[in-house]
Structure formats: structure tokens, C-alpha cells
Image (cartoon, rainbow, N blue to C red):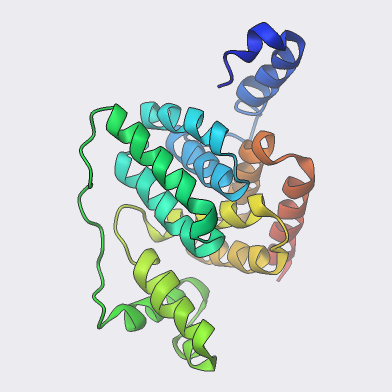
Length: 230
């Protein structure tokens, strides 16, 4: 990443490169399996709107084993948490990069719901993550219904990523954009309910820290601790 800056900013690059790609990646007890790490970084760059870094990271992620479908699913799901206004440049960049690598678009479809059953399957996914009370939560108002049929029914039910992976990338979207601490704490709990425990989430934050900085990383760790205590 940022190869050209070795000529213009060598002192900065000496320290950044060492920190981001050596110290962080190899920190004892904070490592992640490469595909998981790259998926978390892609989601984090979407969350913090790091489009230039995303364009450099995506080829590295694909080379490390992230599949085109996984990359696309990360971008698609970001729409729920960032809105299309922030996701559209990343969708365009992803399509450009995949096409440049000879990958034919569109990719194989991953939808598993229909327009008729998206609500039911959406609140069932919510219930699996957050508990059985979510089967009734959609009745509280139209936004709650949209959460069930659109956010979960249209996206979380798609194949291409597991439910655990989807909760992890959601955690990254929220942590990276900041200002979403209530939702971040809730999704930290959701991650833990699915088996993405406290230690795993702290590893995720640690590996993404170079991309979002210390304040948002420390806030994310505080939310993880709060969720674990609850």
C-alpha cells in the first residue's frame, strides 16, 4: 500500500509501514487468519470512507484468498449501515478492480429470499443473532420493519458470507464510522452470541487500528468490554 510515498515521504513510510504491516500484523495474541483480517479491513475502509486505501487493499485481499463474492457481499451489506451515498464509490471501485482482473460480472447470485418471504426470514435472522424477542420487534414501527425485511431479509440472508462473518463486518462498519456506540455495543453482543467472542473482536479492532486511528479503536474496545460485562 502507498508505494509511491516511499519516494516523497520516506520517514513517514518507514514508521507507518513497520507499524501497520509488521508490528500490528504480527502482534502476539492479536493476529487473525489472513482472509478474516482482509475482510475486516475492507469493511473498516468502507466504514471510514477510505476509498483510496480501499482501491489498494482490495487487490491485496483478493490475492490473500478473499473471493470476489465475499468482497461484493461486504460492499453490498455496507449499504445498510452507511447508506448508498457513501457506498456507491466503493461499489464502482470494486467492479472496476474485479473487471480489470478478468472476472466477469455479474457474479453468481446469492439471494436466498423472495419478496414474499424476506420479512419472515429477516426477523428469523435477527432472532438467531439477538434472541427470540426479535421475532416481534419488527411490529414496533416502519423502521423496525425495514430493519427486518431490508437490512436482515435482503442482506443478512444472502449466501457468500456466513452469519458470523456478516456480524463481524457490521461491527467493523460501525466502529470505523464512529458515533454509533449504542449500535456498536449491540452488535458486539450479537457477535458474541454467534461465537465471535471478546478476544476475537479485540483482535479485529487491533488489526484495523492503522486504518481508523486510536480514538475510534479505543471506543470500539470500550463497547466490546461493555457488551462482555452485560
